[in-house]
Image (cartoon, rainbow, N blue to C red; front, top):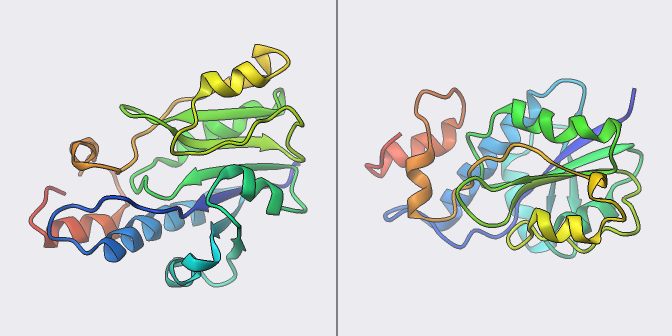
Amino acid sequence: MARRVVVALLGPVSWAPPGIDRPAWRTALAEDVVDLLATLNEVHSAVAVTPADRWLADAVVWPGTEVYEVPEPTPTAVFAALGGYDQAAVIAGDAPDLPGLIIGKLLRPLTSRPLAVAPVEGGSGLLGVAARLPVPAWLPAVDLERGQPAAVRTAAPSPGDLAVTPGWHRLRGPGDLSRLDPAVEGWEATRALLSGAGQPG
């Protein structure tokens, strides 16, 4: 069986709901994503941060979780830092209510294709990127904030080399809060912070 790892990329957060301290918001989002990854079967989970954000990783990781320090918060940098795995997925750290099923669908195409991406539902950028390792030489630098499936597909030798899988929302602005579903299990840290600030959840 392929050795697989799913990495939560805890990148910068440019927005927090009114009344919530941004570092506290960022920590809650990261904690929920890391907790989700820890429940996944048949994959290892890890966290990636820049050296300046090592405090965030230390605040949310489970004992024994691998933490990768990367020079920039991009999937490209994370893939370059990984060793000993056959497949890897890099997931944005601001999708606290992400279902594990979405991550499974991101990894599944790697049995027959070298790369898969999941778009952001209702927004720009990417939710996650999964690749066979080492990553194909044709893969351009990928950024979760500005990356688009079409740009990656254009770089591929064949359009079929890239799978575009179901997307999910990220919490990057006030309009994203309405996408959270209180009926979905999990995301306890984010839910508690929003409830304390009088927000829905």
